[in-house]
Every structure is written in C-alpha cells, then in structure tokens.
Length: 503
Image (cartoon, rainbow, N blue to C red; front, side, top):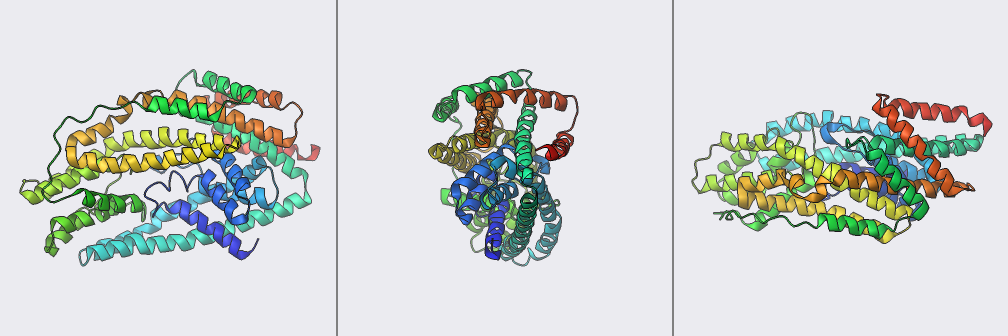
C-alpha cells in the first residue's frame, strides 16, 4: 500500500461521513459499510471483495441509528477497514470484520470533534451574518467547516488504515493461527449483533420469527426477488389525497421550493453543533426564499435570513414538511397577513419534535434497515442487480419523501405537516414493519452465516450454520436479562484469544 492509497481511503471516509453534497442520500448510502467497502474495493482494484467485506460489516450495524447522537460505532470506517484487510491481507470477511469493528469506535471521536469544534464556526457565523448573511453562511457554515472536516477525516482515516493494516500484517505473519481465531470471532459477533437487533422492536415472538427465517434461509435459500416483491406489494398502499384546497402563493413558485430544498438536503449537517444543530441549515435554506420575497429590499431580505438562524433539529427528510409550511407563512406575511416573526419562529420550533419522532421511525427504523438488508442479501447471494435495485429504492425514497414534504407543507400548510406525522399510522407497511424486519434479518443473517461457513471449508455447512441459532437464543436471553452487549463483545474477543494456543 502506498501513501496515495491510504489518502484515497481517507477521502472515501470524508465523502461518507460528511453527508454533504449528496442530496441527503449520503447518510443512507455512502456512510454505510456496504458502500464504503465497495468504494474501497474500487480503489484497491477488487470491487467485489470490497463489497462483500462491507456487506458483512454492515450486518453488525443493521440497528444503527444516529437518533439523539447515540452511535454504536462508525459504519463507514468499519467498511473501509474490513475491505482493506480482506483485499490486502487475503483475510476471510468475518476475520476482517473482527479486526475492523472495535477500531471503528474511534470514529466516534471524530463525531464528537465535529459537534464541539464546529461551535467555533457557529460563533463566527453569528458575529458576521448581519453584515452579509449569504457570504457568512457559505464561509462559516459550508466552506470552512467542510474544509476542516476534509483535512481531519483524510488524515484520521489514512492513519487508522495504515496502523491497522501494518499491525494486522505483522501479527498474522507471526501467528498465522490468529486469522482462524479472528474468523470465529467475526462469526460470533454477527450472531450477537442479530440477537441484539431483535430487541429493537419489542415483540415476544421476534426470536421465533427470526429462527424460522434463519433456518429457511440456510436450508432452502430464499430467492431474493421474492422478498423484494413481497415488500413492494405491502408498501404499495395508496394514501388518500389531501382534500384541502391548495394554497395559492403570492410570490413563491415551485422552482423556489426546489432551490430551498437543494440547499437544505445538501447541507443539513455541514456544520452540525451542539448549540444550534440544524439551525444554520434552516437559515441557509431560506436564502432563495427571502431573495424571491424581498427582491430589491436588502434589509428585509437579510433580516429574514438572520431570524431563522436559531436552534432547530428534526428528522431531515420527513421533517421537510415544516420547511414548506414555514415558507407558506413567510409568503403570507409578505402578502399582508399579520404573522409576527415570533409566531413563525414558535410554529417552527413547536413542530420539530412531533415530526422528528415519526421521521426517525420512518427513515432510520423502517426504510433504511429493511433496504440495507436487501442490499446485503443481494451481495452475499451474488445477485448484484438486487443490491443495485435496493440501493436505488433507498436513494429514491429519501429524495421523494424530502421533496414531497416541501411541496405538501407549502401547499397544504398544517394539513401537510399532519400527514407527515400520521404517515407511519396510515400505511400498513409501517404497522407491520417490525415483523418484516425480523423476518428479513433472519433470512440475511442465515444466508450470510451459511456463506461464511462455506468459505471456511466446514464439511456439514448447513448443520453447522443451523446450530448457531442456539447462540442467538442465548445472547438474546442474556441481553434481556440486563447483560450489556459491550460486555459480551469484550468477552467474545477474550475467549477466542484464549483458544489461540489450541488452533
């Protein structure tokens, strides 16, 4: 590996972890292990191995959410390191994941850096925004924080990749049996991850549904497309159209909404901080709106942008109905309706909590994990068209939900926002999503374990894979009894290393 190669891996990490410049889909695609593994494979000249390593790694993060900043590791870094180790050291995917997973925790340091250090840029923004709002937002909300993130991300990921690569190379060269032990460790980690994910939705029959799907996958190997057809049929329910008459705008047109949406979706987390979270992004998204409403009136335009620079945080894709509604209120205010600035600000803040709750459930608990399971299934089954189709559905759903939210909120106001809040309750797919997730988790875990055991060269692949279901039951029971998964992870590593002399 050359210095250029490690720097390119650092660039992949920046692209995935930044989530800017991707119309909101980067968090659901490029940031996930399956995609960072694929990109790493492309850089290292073995895209298929990188994709497989990323897919196996992603199964450890299948219940990953960023809700409330509660992270269990860095899936982007895990995918990069897993692919690097599998390709360059010729490790099995499970062994590569066993090394990469604990190291991915270092990514949380960078996440905390962003939230803490970005306060400096926000402080500068608040001081200069009244002089030239657009210039200040571009400088202190986009260019400088993203430039800093680029430098730090590339150095951080490149150094991490070099250190892990060099250390693993040396240790495995000295102790070849370590690769075998790490492979077993990786398999058990996948089982533990599945057992933990079953508790994401509280249902006493989850373990039964999972076990049935797991065994069906191992012995019958479900056709991936049958699963996709079932999901599409369940999600094809059409909602009733909004009967309320559309708002007739005085100034704002559809193209203005799209310009605002483009800024919001590309820069929601460009300079994320504890103090204001998405507040500057909301202010930035109002730039084209205020320009249109107050053409030739610089003071009013600047004031409109500045007064939206306050605390704001919601689910960035489903929450766009709030943006549309606020733009409607701004349009009405310009047309002569007596809406005070305080009323608009209070309305914005009052809506963000309710929409955030439903939004996180919609995207991070339903859409993302189910479609990512589809991607993983396509990779381990070597049906790349299924992987591509699931990825397109993921990107398409995010873009559709976010853009439609802008238009629904603007044209239907409160009713448009209410439809967003009620989205999970009105569509049958969301009401049974926990059962779908558990069943798919069983299918994907079973298929992945089967393929990994097959790669090891075990004689009775089906029987050995099926027997691991008992570990799922044991881990699930221990977690429900209050044993923390972190404790079990450490125990798994220690016990496997203790067996090293006997390999």
